[in-house]
Image (cartoon, one colour):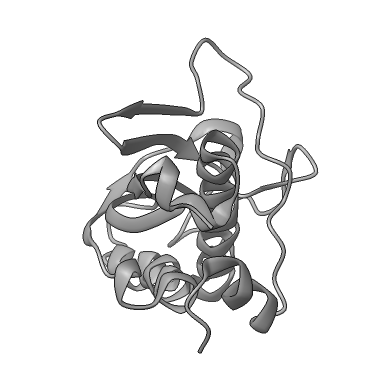
Length: 160
């Protein structure tokens, strides 16, 4: 597999969407000393949440896993826009996944595994990360998944 994330995305037949525009009072990405903190991303495509529902009530794991993959592409798009392109991203440090679920649903890690797997396919070994998978009662816009990311950026002089 090719080393650069842009080439890996192409190999996977994936393209980054336009970065999500915040609807409220926050910024999509902040940076400190080369560490990028990406705000929570919903499974949005073309500005709308494409998958809605609650795990354990009206949504299955496979649908939620697809939502998690959409969140990953949104998060990468925001981070890439911040650093001037996806190849300016170096490593995924941490993923925090929130899963809207009923009190008796306990497979949140299986849902967020879809995000972790996709990050590994895009960034290779640099996609392996620390992670939390948390069940919550509800998420904005009835989204089943919201994911935050902490990544590192390449030194600006070392970017392709």
